[in-house]
Image (cartoon, rainbow, N blue to C red; front, side, top):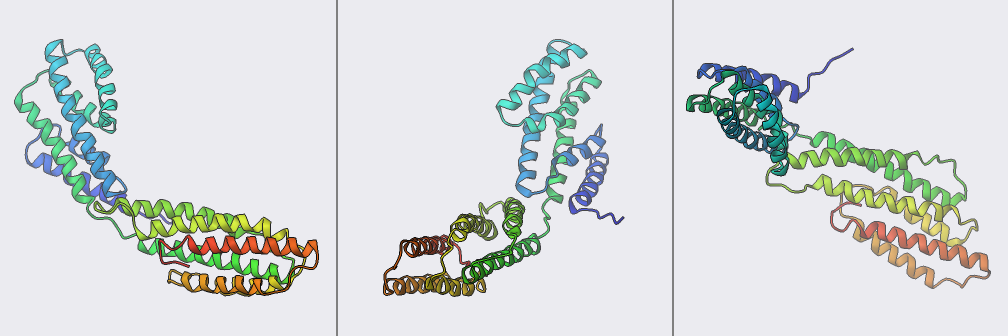
Length: 316
């Protein structure tokens, strides 16, 4: 079985070794703890890493202050540690820096083991924090590009959309289908994974709140909801009328134009022309024909929404 080392694992290994080496080089006591802090601060995105670093720095600073108040004010005793945590943990939760509880506990136990509180000890602990957090932020500056994976998701989703629309066109022509519809469920799963990856890509850029791919997948998600909604409507139409073939031609042409290019405006124009041609046709001759044509018109309106919804991003 092949074992692949991920980039986060590699960064953690390098960062931990670097943090311990620096802490030892500058003569800090408990220097291995700098490596622990680095391990805890390395996250899978730059924004998360920065937030983690901030939480740990604030929590550790509070733990140093609490250590002075409780240890020097009461005693260096295990019961005092428990008493301190009763106040310390709720405070970190209130300040929303509870992600730093584990790191700050390490600092707290250093001071407890020394049974003394001097400026030298305080500076030593601050040094461990700065080295550990600083190295974590440094190694986390590198984030591999996710574009290749995102483009692959895009291609897979577009291929599924092509199949779905093509099958709709076939059903309109034949009034029967052997299609299982599995592409609908597959696309829903792909979209969830793709959005998660795209959001991670957003978090790797400090000045970006949203990106092209995230908007793209959100819009595809809305389009998928429309296609899902139209399927029961489509399969309920039993009567074969001329309009079915006209709509089938349109849907088939649309299925071959699933790509990020800006073609929605063209298809909206063609759809409008299709609707106008319906108005020029003879009126229904029976109730069944009237209902079938009404359902087809409803279907056309849903497809119109499918095209309109993409106007915020240039995709088909």
